[in-house]
Length: 260
Ligand code: GLU
Image (cartoon, rainbow, N blue to C red; front, side, top):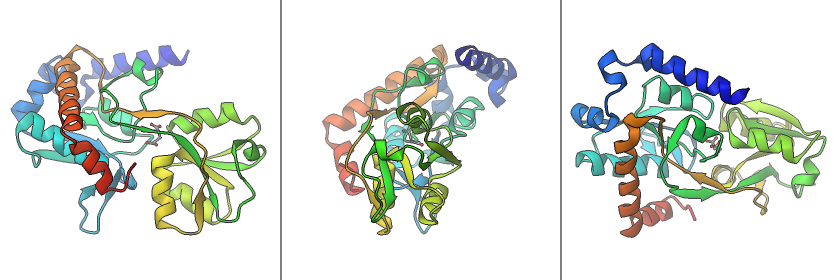
């Protein structure tokens, strides 16, 4: 049923023109970007150190850095990029409305998402983990039974925690800072999300602890609209990921943000 809904949504987006002019609908996305001479990328701002803004309001983190490398690869200049803030729950909508050319937004490649989205090869692999208040008696996923757990709407943990812990009470949040606030104020007992995001919270806030176990593999991919118009762009993005992996750039960028 869900698959049919996703397919219908895709057809509606295409028929409505995705917010683009008619002649652009079936055009080649890579050509559109080259003609525009600017890449438009959706990134997160609430997931330090993958996607956040510094005090000057600049987009920072591993995801925007990868975006700049892709802009350089496609257009010869890493400055030919515009970032659009997205959240976990609105990112797919922003991709299909045509607001962005691609998402680089801590987005896990899953079989279900592949029905709707074309993913690049993975550029990082995260794992789901649990964040608790310091001194909490929760030590592993079984301890979450009958407990209140914060998740962010639209994330992979929203699904997985329901399956992994029957009887868990899920509190949905719109953003990661909102989830952290719920934990700090005692309204929830834990947050379940990717270790990459939870590490960022634990590094900046000494009142919370990241538990050591990982409960999934979350390969992150650059997300493109699904369809033949994205084929050339996908090849180009994969080329950039290959080149920047082999020349060691991606590793250096990860290290500069303290990502392992
Ligand atoms: N990687 C997970 C996902 O794609 C969680 C991270 C996020 O909320 O962006 O759902």
